Structure formats: C-alpha cells, structure tokens
Length: 159
Image (cartoon, helix red, strand yellow):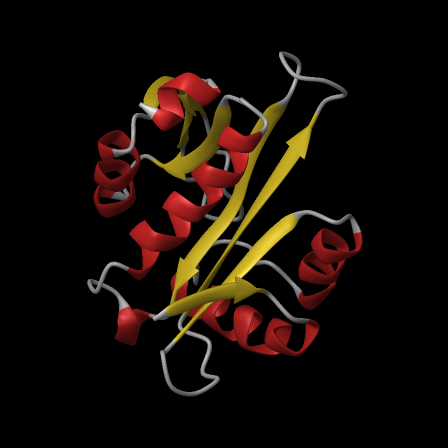
C-alpha cells in the first residue's frame, strides 16, 4: 500500500465510501471535500502498491501562525469496508500525526462514542478523551468524544 496526496478525481469515490461508513449521519459531500482541498489542508489517499484504486483517505488541518501556537485537527479518516483490518487506517493516522509533528502541534479529533475500533486506534497513538459532545452527529444524534494527542517536540519525535 502507498500513501499519496488525495486528488480531485478521488472525491467521487470518497463520497461513496462516506455514504457506506456513515449511513445514519450526514456523510461528507463532494463540496466538502473540494472545500478542504481548496483550503490547502493535508489530505492523503491510500492506494494498493499496484493500481489506482482508492482504499481509504484522511485529512488534517493545521492552524496557527508560529511554533507554539499551532493546532491540528483530524477532519476525517475513512477506509472502504472491504479493505478494513489491514492497517490502512493506522497508516493514514500515522501520516497525519507525522504532519502535525512537523508543526509541534497538538492534534484534536471527534469520534463517535460507540466506535470502539477507532477509539482503540486513537488511544494506541496517544490520544486522550477530553470531553463529550452530545448529539454531535446528525441526523442520528450520536454523541462524540473530543480527543487530543499532546504536541510532540522535534526532540520527542527524533527520540
């Protein structure tokens, strides 16, 4: 598997995957993905070593003006159901965290409180639960945890 920048021609497949992964909620639209790419946010595609199939995608935004003030937010991670359980989500998350580490930024995200697989992945990568957002996901009304992974300095990343 290889990771590379998400391309605009991938967006239709991202939307298809979103509809499968989040059927009871409001999955991301084509417009949302285009907006993220237009904003210059860091988006990746996971593809097989051979071929162009989109296996999964992930996106991260970093805000701030200088070191010590940056914050990163995981906007999305999605892996097509037929490709789950093969480390693709983990690889995408690690790539997002490496990007955030370049800015020494803490990383925030929201995740459904009932998504045990994602919670386990995030906790293994140093995320802690900060709080709960009641009825965060719509229209289902599912709750979300807000989680954070503290900023890592260059020395911590190198060590």
